[in-house]
Image (cartoon, rainbow, N blue to C red; front, side):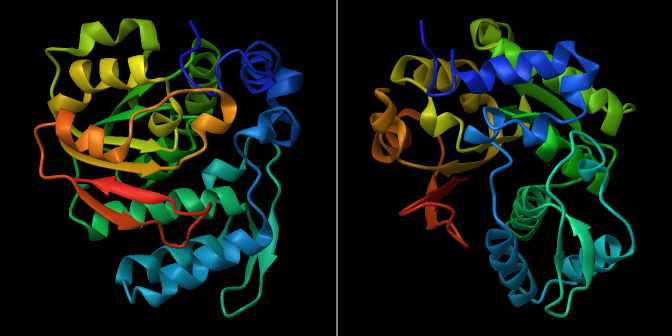
Length: 263
């Protein structure tokens, strides 16, 4: 059974190849099949994120900008990402737009009061582990549970062993979420992945995982129907979870009409 628009695609096979082969792992962020889903943000996308972050006037942003100006982020040391320079007052010589986006999510979480030290975080659709890498770099007391396709989980294991080897990370496939029904999490994150899953898998995730999460941050897009996947609507989601769910526009937007669903 197909679980999401990424399931049984060249992206998934590229992820598995990178997990099995050191040669493929060294360059997986340049693999065009992998870039169908991740690592396809442009320099212009990165500039929009930087402008957004600086506009927040958040001291944490200044700290991260200073940090990135001094040396590459750990997330940019593996997989051969596309590294670009930004001269508009930032002076970044080497940073990937994808890493900037993961930092943007981290800043959002902190600003919205959804992220604190010691939190147990579950991520639905963790990609290669970039968001977890950035979050653990922010605070190394965080713990993670990654839920993803088996191919992506295999890559996450390898990637996070390289980037954050001391972090506590558990890995779960979509078929194993029933084992999490008695678990409690402080925060669930999903950057697009949840909204790209099939209705059946989404309801399973709600019942097994999301209902057990004190906070949530889901970047919600509306492309599943284009890929032949029937997904629930945001209104349906709100009716299925026991939270006061808030909706806001994604800023800066990465696709037309994207929303942030949070509680």
